[in-house]
Image (tube, rainbow, N blue to C red):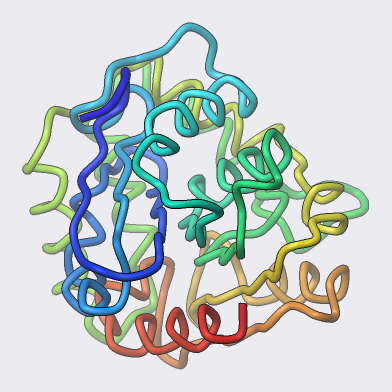
Length: 261
């Protein structure tokens, strides 16, 4: 625990900070942490208002990035590798915008620098889906979260097992509060970190699932088009949470990227 946010640290080696997705918490990365703890010193953050972390004043990407940096920086030896999954990818980019010198490399996992569809970003997610989640949170909090979980594993051959893992991870910490969920949805709906993605000097990479229904392969390919230097890999049979069904493959890519970075 450091500051207002809960940070779990384990492993030995170069610093690697992991930021989870909307409505989750750091424990969701457990299969991946097991694969990586011999190679990295892992700093697994519960985002504001998620898991064991307190809510913060203001839910903007900038405010959340500052809270993340305040919690993580004291435990870092220097610039770190950052891995952001889904919403966590947008927040990792917000961290890079706020303090680029803290980022030795940035890996977007099932994430892109813009989540929602726009006229100049047709590969993004339909904004009506995000608006529906926001509306339904007020009337059916639990049901909305369960539907979101189902979307994350849709299309995977082992979808049932991955969904069970997600539900077990959620059970391991307090449920996120309404304010934190609303702030996260607002970021997914509105944030556009493409300028940061295009200008960041640190090495970058993209890893996703061929069957992801939330951040489709086309979104990662569009991000790669803006950064031809970015490494890109799409995992066959994987959905939005590839580290659950294929943790060894994800860990292998992380190691490759870290070696290059």
